[in-house]
Length: 327
Image (tube, rainbow, N blue to C red; front, side):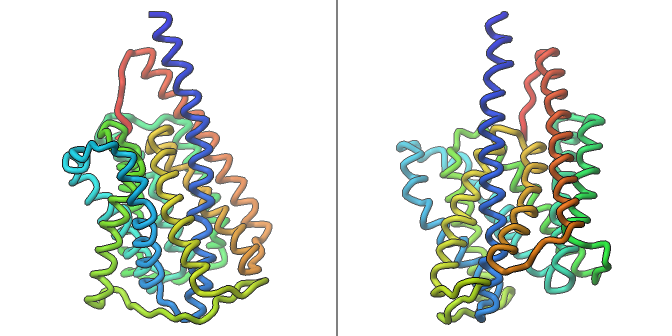
């Protein structure tokens, strides 16, 4: 019994450490997407065309590694077909379609703030589905992170708010929450590569259909793309969007969620906003203000407090001998 207790205490610590590393890299990869996409949009691409190419390219990159990761156990795809479709339709295509429709009706900052309140939805789901009531530290950390987001997105200066835009942004928030919850499911036997590839392929097909029927405007160009300090061929940001900000980002995000759990991973994912500011500074010459930097510090503080709260919950679960799923 002592050895078992020791394993329970030590094994999660290494997984948590690697989980934070994967989550940080995933946030960095996701954060790069905005700046790369901005260059394409300025060159004449529509958002729908850029995100569809991004998702389909990522699926193509991951197909062979995903097949290898299954090691011939194709039944895992059949057994988890519903999960893969939900991940692709809601967590990938639905989330991005809702977000782009939101920014068509309201300021980007407001849309981002609403979408990135998804950790609240995740906490509520864990409470409703698994009776994991959030502790005091989780609530405090979430409040700090939310305040930091308001500062980072510079919403105090005033923003355009539209009812239809809010509805779309709430849809993006739900899609993001579904992404974190499904990504954290480690009981399916489905490798992260397989889940990411299947979800991206499904989401990409949905986006392509949406473009063909006119739900999302499609337009693209082969003109060079100009950033703050360089002009590059159009395919350079496309490759970056597909390989780095989608294929790599989704795989790392799933790996992080399975180590940290959906609640903590969704809070760590808020770092995407910070990395987006850094890349906007480097590639678009958009320097963050002191208020935004202070907001970033609040987000990091909030994540630390949430982590302390999760550790407290885990210790209580171990002491009672319960094993609660993260999904």
